[in-house]
Image (cartoon, rainbow, N blue to C red):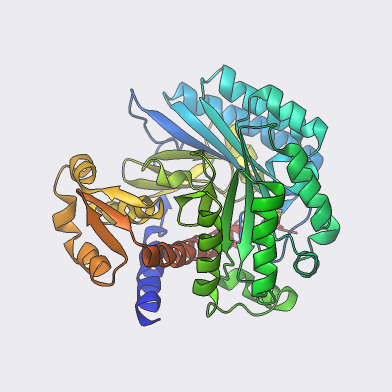
Length: 422
Ligand code: SF4
C-alpha cells in the first residue's frame, strides 16, 4: 500500500540518520549514569555454532577459547559499568547464541543476580541447548526467561533455511520445547513468517502446533527481514523475499493467537501472561548495552560498541568498555523514537510523554500523530494513543524497516572491523 511504503521510507531515512555516529571522547567510553536510576542491561554474545543465511545479527563462528575469553571480558565490562555507578534492574543476554558455553553463561547470570542485584534475567538460545544439563545450570543460576530461536516447525522450511540438520526436525524441536516448559518462568519461541515457500497451510500448522500441541507461554512472530547484506544469500537459499503477503499472514497469526487467549506484548509478540519480552527497548527509553556490537541509549544519546572481537577483548583488558562511538539525538528525534517504541508495545500515554520530555510532546509531534490518526493506525482513548488492529500491522512493517537499517549498519561495521564472519 502507498501509505505503508511511504512510512517505511520515512523510518528508513530516520534510522539511517540516527546511526551516523561520532567517536566518543571519554577514557572508558562509558556514559555517565543517573545516580538513583536502575537501568536495563543488554549483553551481547556473538558466537554461533554455525551461521544461518538469513541472519543479520552481529554473530561470528564459535571458537571455544575465544568465547571463553569473551565471557571473561564481558564479566569485566559489567564490573567496569558497576564501578562507574550503574545499577541494573533487568538483563537481556542476546546473540548470537549465548548458550554456546553454558557454564560461562550460568556464572554470568549468577553474578548478575547475586552481586549486582539484577531482578530478572533473560537469555537467548537454540533448540540444541534445550537439554537437561544446560537447563539445570541456567535454572540454578536464576534465569527467568529463555528465548528459543525456532523460526519454523515445518520440516521443508527448516531444510531450506539449513536448520534441520543443525537443530533437528520439527518433531525433535517440539519435544524439546515441551520438556523445557516449566523449567523457567517464561519460555519464548521465536518464529518467522513470510518465507517465500511458506503456504497458508504451513503457517496454520505452525500456529496450531505452538498453541495447541506445545502450549508455548510466549511466541514472537518476526516478519522475514531482507536487508542489503543478506539479500543475495537469502535469495539463493530460501528464495526472493516479497512483502505482498505479509499483511495477510500477520492477520492470520494475530487472529489465531488472540483466539487462543494470548495477548499482545508487542505488535509481534504474544504472551499467555505478562512477561519479559525480547524487545526491551519498548520498556525503557534508557538502556546500557555491553559486549561487542551492542547499542546503548542513555539520556538521548545513542552509543555503539566495537564490532571487532579482537578489539573488544583488547579494550576491556585495557580497562575500557567496548563503547567507541555515539550520536546525540535532537529532542524531536528522541520524541519520534519514543513514539515508535512505545506504540510498538501497543500504547503511549500522552500525559506521561508530555511530563518526561518537559514540554508538550503532543504539540511537537502533532503532524505525526495527526497523520497516524487520519490513516486509522491509532486512536486516542483517555489521553492515551492506542494502536488499532490495522495499526498493529503498520507497526510490524515499521519495525521491520527500522531493524533492516540497523542490520545494514551492523554489516557495515563488521566489514570495517575486518572481522572474519565465517
Ligand atoms: S539466526 Fe540465531 S543461530 Fe542463526 S546465525 Fe543468527 S543468531 Fe546465530
